[in-house]
Image (tube, rainbow, N blue to C red; front, side, top):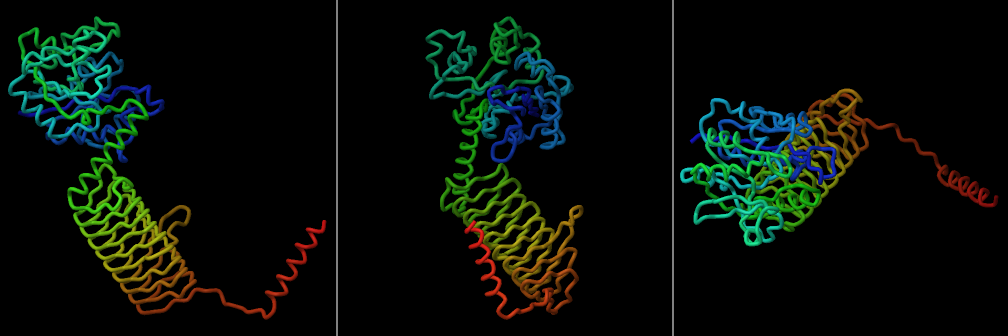
Length: 449
């Protein structure tokens, strides 16, 4: 059965106390919207519709950046969740199959749960996702009649017996496309809020003799983000899950609670991640690599056997080949470092290519930016860059070439050559003592005043 997704992302999120649309707040370096869309993609939907509202242009741009194939529609007036789903109807014109309604601020529903909902559609016209809450609070309750769902009761309308139920409504719902929109067309806004509630489709379905069922998931999957506290809880939940997954997949985390993963971090088995490492988006660390303590990585690739850190920063475009060594207080950006090369300390390598088994001395800087344009530095295989060398790009250092410590290199260095770019040293006998004596006398004179 083909499946389509409707993802509701219209809410303002007043409790976030933010000028930013709620679904654009980030967990693990990615908008909440991206997490929800990634979950839905597991069903391989033939169409995905994102319903925007508050800050519609910004949410539209984010949705299309995540997936250029999605359809984006706007709920100009926020008249309830049922009304929001209705806005997706034109985008699903001609579609025949099941529709699952998801929420942009509920990022952790598992693909397996959605697959269970899709399978349950074989027995029920409408399927609702429920969960048993440890503290049901003001959640809507799912009232069952045997194996079937009889109705959804909002907390404010529930009896004491219904409030005692722990089976709660997540809001996620699945139904045949034609049936869903037929039921939504029959919704009423005759309630205190004057809104059209998606949850009312269950009662309408049962009144028409259609079966409704429930798929139950773990409460943690239904965590919604409505406040900064919720956002922090969502981040903690993501990190706990990511750490557990890494350990289960054969990654060594020496202090798991101090490592922070991004939405899309990929780490191979037998990699070792030391304490206080932070991964930004788009990082791949291959099997057998080691990321040492207090390092920060984003937009980079670390190959097998490489060692990074401690206190290293890899920025977007950093590509480390096998057995590369990047040490403390080294920053690498938009640079390719070939097999066996060493960049061990106090160095910036930007917009550069470093050849295999080259050795970059402490304090080296590739001076890549002239204030307007970026320029590249090429360092050949087996080159030796002396400590405190300034490489003023564009410049090429040849294979097996050397630069003397403290040099400023502004022109290309041929293969096998030694380049020196220092100012000439002069020695003034006795001048250091005379100068210090004069300065101390001046200091004593000023104190006397």
